[in-house]
Length: 311
Image (cartoon, rainbow, N blue to C red):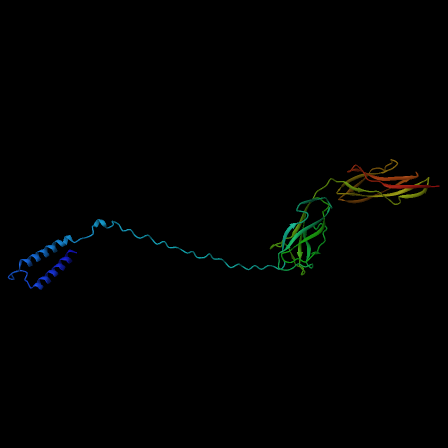
């Protein structure tokens, strides 16, 4: 900066001297005025090297503070949403609704009759007509009819109550019957993608062994005869039990007489018929009954008999 200033002022001085046509040194006889001017200019130039106004160093910042960084705003890419996969609905498909009757593990007596009802939804794309059937597929059928037709047409999304009349087995245990639907082409289908059956499960309790019935019948309940000798009534009685076991019994009559005790063996629940005869010469009304000693200790209802004596 100082050198440049000296050159500039020197140039100005030369131009000034030339313009005045005065020599700087020697025989020109320069006037004091010119010398004074030169001196003043020289001094000014010399002094100017140190007196040129400058900005104080202390006014400059000691460090340069960079501008704050630009906060870039990132716009996220939109979330990718896959196109839905088209699902093909089968023609014949079913979905379980509820057990309308006989919930699972309902307790039953041996041989008890009952009606099982399921509510089933048509989850397929085809209408179930009455040409569709309900069919037993496995387990214990429990005397149920199979196959049998649906009771009505069922549109997709609708439900139908399917009922089947059943009978509990005579023996104790847990029993399950599995059922499915069958289309008009004879193809069976069940519930959901696995074609599972809809089913009924019952528990048959083993009751105490007992005679449930022993009613006496007579070949003739009203006889006319000469007395004496009177008449003989021929009697029979079906003895029915609820399971396997031994029965002891005897016949008993209105005059207080009885027969000897007899024994019956039952391998399972069922009925066995027994017979006897009763003779009397007494005019009037009579009766006969069976007393079950084992296992009941019970006198079952009697049957009325009548003898009319004629001369």
